[in-house]
Length: 344
Image 1 (spheres, rainbow, N blue to C red):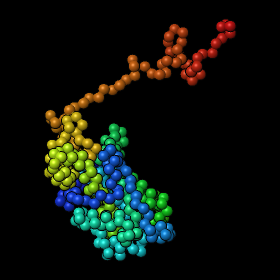
Image 2 (image 1 turned 90 degrees about the vertical axis):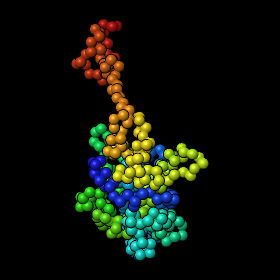
Image 3 (image 1 turned 180 degrees about the horizontal axis):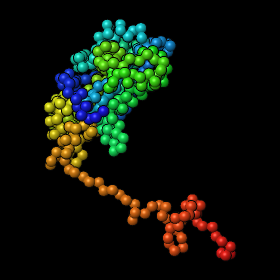
């Protein structure tokens, strides 16, 4: 996917995408990896009802949060549960819906229930997240040869999460996924990889299928918490007597169309290094700020050549007069040349 398209996706309702204050910190928030700019995967324990009988048919949903922001990770969420309880538990009892239409408080309460032992959600649902760091997204898209675009990264994350669940022995019978690009093309690719499972890829799947809605909540709450962890490295540098500022009050949603985000980027840009690992340097917003006249420092990296332009093979197969014998087989003369009878 081209970067410009990523920013089109970012131009959604900013208030709905603003990170929550006092967001629930789920077990999927690995602070050490986040601060190191690393991507990682987290899996919950297999739910009790499934552990007791691995033959139970399950339904699985996948969705993402944070596709378009210039700040923070893109997080893929996955959730599975017994097929027979798909509608009754998620839609009717707990009212899961697309995470963007749920309030931050309600999203956090649902995620907390998924992580709290003895609750029905904890006992019947398994979930996982893949946190794709801004650093890794940017480095993939900026590869000098064969860029690893956002669609490809997202698809690989989805496939890997699903494979992990199958590897645990879960009997997944149905899979529902919010689409990347063309639903038909994406679905056919997944059907080739998981031929024994019924797969549905659809636009707005997070509003149509409760398991995708629940996966959306896992992704969104995890991303909100990751943004808080990232932001506190900046907020903590202020006056120690003041209460640390929340990400929502500092860099806002992290989307390029959010004025709080662009204002923060302009005010916290290092002229040499730009920003930290929370920034996607492949996004046009970051590129434009770094390349603006007088904003950043331009660096030209020299190309290092071998000393005097010589190759390692130049030290082998030399003749008596110092010239290189081009006709000689380098391997046969690696340890020297055969001697003749005249030497003895």
